[in-house]
Image (cartoon, rainbow, N blue to C red; front, side, top):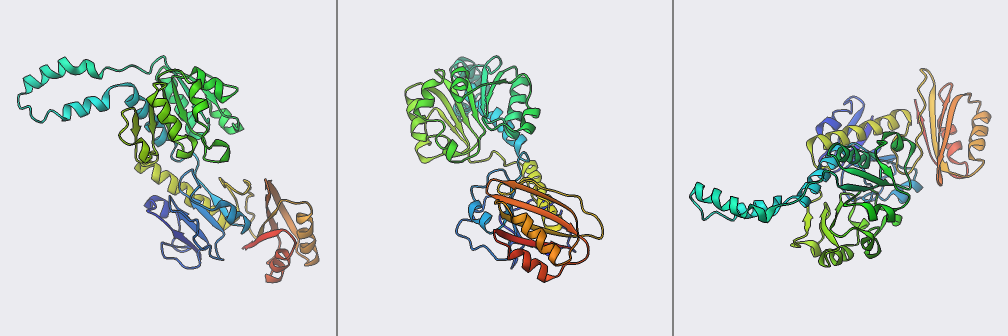
Amino acid sequence: MYKIRTYNQISVKGLDRFARQSYEVGSDIGHPDAFLLRSQKLQGVEVPKSLIAAARAGAGTNNIPVAEYSKLGVVVFNTPGANANAVKELVMAGMLLATRGILPGMAYVNSLTHMTDAAEMAALLEKEKSRFAGGEIKGKTLGIVGLGAIGSLVADMALAMGMKVVGFDPALSIDAAWRLSNEVTRMENLQALLARSDYISLHVPAMDATRHLINDDALKLMRPGAVLLNFARETIVESAAVLRGLNAGKLGRYVCDFPEPVMLGHAKVIAMPHIGASTEESEENCAVMAADELMDYLENGNITNSVNFPAVSMARTPGLTRITFANDNVSGVLGQVLSVLADKKVNVIDMVNKSRGELAFNIVDVEGSPGDDVVAAIAAVGHVIRVRLIA
């Protein structure tokens, strides 16, 4: 029986994916095979020797010590795209809130608690409504930085609203390129995008290369009064630079899902409490996808949507035993493992080998039922990190 330790509140729809006759699931599980979590920070948490996988029900994995897990052969999964629609809709809300006088208008209406005459209030609001006039997004240009699962949906939404869309993504995958509308104008660099956009929406991961991507130099390139939307991660934007841009009138509005103390109360900041993926549908989608990823890995050794190991899968053949092993991506390891199997008289029927950066992963289907001595011999091969036998 496989054991799954959960952190945070995981959607029941995700938990129900685990068949009770094959899985033990709970927040107090000892010796877990896998972790299933949302935002729980695992840095500093002892890694059980039994742990072979961790799945984050969400896209970001900065709450998981991925580098440490990689050295131990623990596969880390995320759920890209599962919360994309929720974030997309909030981006639209952010653009509209930044463009129309919705929030100050509502605040003004709610300040009129002293009034008791409806006709008098209607007359006053008719007189004062010009104070809250705004603009329209139709015909404006939206610049999208990061054209993955969320960015491509934001692009489609903006096009449907009559906006012009330009995009920049130096790491655009083939799958993402296929999803992208041909109405999106691809920009060669970030600088060109910033110079052409009335709105800039950020959808890139938090990493060293994107830290403070939006800084003083970037703000200088933006159109006066541009609106910056950050529903990605707080580290992508240098908050002090944004405040300088807002105070100088260079930046029109800053809409973010990651408020910081220095931003609170600023008239040109619209801050939300990290609710980009906080919809019932999004949480269900993320939990279901994470559970399915874990089950396919635990039961079959297949890897989909891992942030540290390569994508690899092979269909199961009845009657065969599956061996999987992770190793440092150096030459000769696979050959040595195959030699071990030959020496042990284990017949290989099918196999697949994939690598990603410094790591490699292998699935080998064999005849018979190799014993613990075979597993131990493979584990003893230099640069092999972890071995599993799946009946």
